[in-house]
Image (cartoon, rainbow, N blue to C red):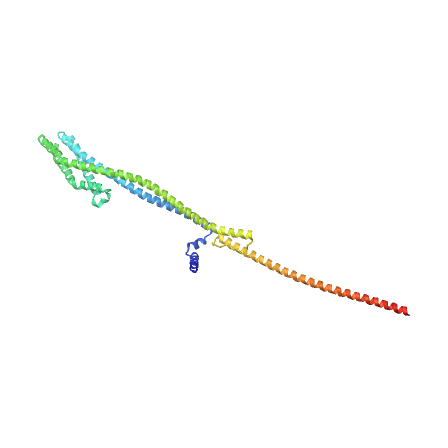
Length: 367
């Protein structure tokens, strides 16, 4: 029991400490408490909603980035595949136009343009999928496909250089008719030799990589849809949690404001209905309600003092009344005794007078 009381005293001391939140809250005015309650409600709702949006946007942004990365990779693969086809197609055209130097010159200029584009696209591809930039790999399958493409087709740059130099050295405007035929045969053998198998394998590997990236794009698209659903659930959950916390804060704040008022009202009703002036309203806060409770306590004490004074006065009046009645009774007894004595004296006087009269008559009769 003693230990329990020590715990209660410790709790009271902590609540009365200037560093205690209860002590600080008790010293606020009612308007400040209401403003603080609304501020806390809005802060909790806004903070919870903002955190929910941030978390949801984080997952959605990651999924969106994966989808954009897959789209960019697909675009790069299609670009590489397209430019290789253009180089191959333009090579065939140049063989056909060997007997037409003006048109051959136009196609050769176009070939140089395609070769340069292919060289740049291949360079960008190797730079994007280098080991230093391996974070771009979205899956192990893609990593293996890219590694195979880079390791198997290291000679693609040499193929482009060979193409550029071979067609440059076989310019029909600088060759005789016999040399043109020899050049056509040489270029045809180049186009249908081992290089054709290398380019076909290169295109097959690119196609395989495109299929892998396309699957990853579909997966990223599904993840984006799931992220959007997750975003909705996170926002809904954060709003629900914020509303729940805000409701609890509202209940706590309203009780903290209403409880002292209810206590003062209950004491006032008891004092009025039961005329029990020994009651005191608890002073729980230092705001307007606390001032009202203290004022009510002073009023009860003053009324109690007035009632006590009235009671003492009534007792004194009753004592005075009893003393006065006793004095009246004593005076009455005294007057009654005097009246009796006076009547006895009168009676004695009458007897004496009667005796004197009888004596006088007897004397007169004798004479």
